[in-house]
Image (cartoon, rainbow, N blue to C red; front, side):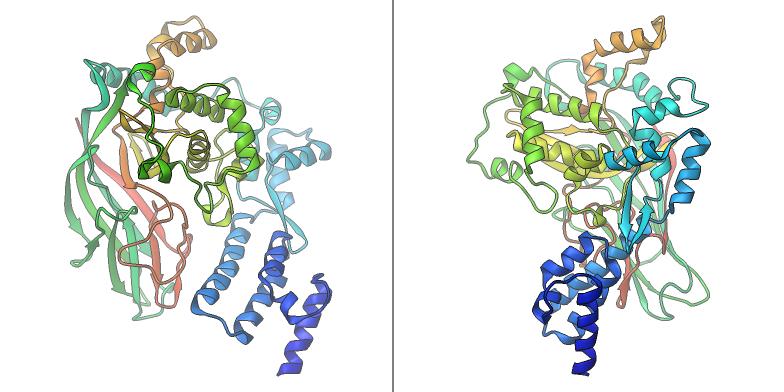
Length: 503
């Protein structure tokens, strides 16, 4: 057996360049991480499995090593497209594309790809993302006549002026909750037959609304399971937990219906008069201006870019607006890789020049903290009529005011009253920007169409999970496992339905 293992180790060392042969070198964390970073996933997996089988490791070490294998499989799933598929998609929209242009977009990160075991693999939505990220590619795309209509932009451009008018009546530096919306919804998770062995207990965590100043009157109307556990408010991930045994011939369905009332909240304050100096010795300030592994790290890029954005500005809110505007201008929205596959999300946004809501939200949080503004994560769902989806945003703390919502990916809002009266779109946008309460609404407010689930990221669950999470940062779709394994996304389905809006 020993001779057999030695032969395997030697083969791995020779084939994958592990340097001078020694068990210690081959099985070191540094070598495993190097193989993964170089895209040598098969070699890394072989080394990990042998290390687990032959080493004297703790349960924690085995857990971490198994997750490295799991993470590589998740990356393989995210990078599932071949060059022929992606290039065919691009050529449909830009038939004259050249190899030089493709190589340029790949180098810029606009056309996301990765070498895995010697083969170039593209992100599953790389082709579509290219035309979202690269302005050069956008200009080449056939069949596009000007800006595409965005119904949510139009809805918010008509809705938010009413919110600021209602919330701005009188002095409102603490943030006024106005124009409540009562929503009835249904959430379900379905685990297909055959995913879990017959008779084994399926454990499911589903998102659940937090009880706070924006969410009131939460009423759980029905559940698919008579027994369930709602996590305490002290847990940053608010969940409802259910379980049931698997049946080989039928899917397992978990779900609930509830109603709750949600409010618009907008803060009207004078940043120069109302914001007080921070107590930099307070626990709040220290906690929410500090780095946090693995995604809130003050890298050299974060420091350099934030310093260039903020300049000599000293006022915390005005600094946050500068950061908000910069991110909105320079990092367009694009479909996201699963967060568990990314080592440092803000750095990923900087390197690839794009990000989804949570990715740019974490970039805002990191830059704000580096600039001395306490900031933290909040997330759940957006439930706007006709536009229901997962969503993440942030909160910033200003002394004398409190925690204020910041929705980085919703960006600037153009008051539709200005847009409609203008002679053209460019003129309308310039006029709409003059209504700064609406234009910068999401630097100090949040609309009512939210389902707030999380008050931070990468927290614990109640009850605790056994296996690694499918989503290691956020919690919106849910988590599913049985005693033998975690069930990753794609092995079960989730569905959010808004059944009723009442105003």
